[in-house]
Image (tube, rainbow, N blue to C red; front, side):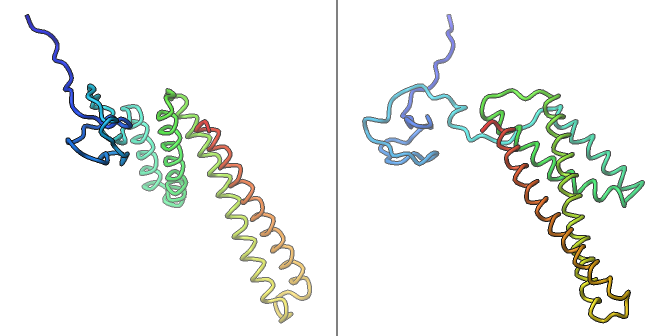
Length: 195
């Protein structure tokens, strides 16, 4: 008559449960101090002692492959649209992966619909931020150029100075808006991960 094998009984760290060599003072995995009375002889769960590695599901892999196919297709057909799309998708994918990983570490199950929703909302936020930053850069460049040529009065007369000041004011407003959007993104990230 055979019975199920019992888990090995060895010395274990009281904090993380990692197996410890005899007569050790510090846990090799978590660095916790180990005293002679703290080390117990308890069954070791190998999943506790193993470091957590990044993993993803088959559906996530298929979603990434679909996005990569769309990006490569855009790069082949319309590189002028494909390059900005790829640049926008990188932070979207990183943010979505970070949010999903944080939620799963907290014990929450993230469905496929929630992953797609997180990605869509992250993409819309990335587009808004890119538009605000582009407007700030364009208005700032135009404003500085107009202010540089305004003292000469050869290139447009006295109205150029007013246009330059106006464009610089628009650039300042766009920078202020970019700062506000960035703060809003941080608050939203904290909300998404459940902090």
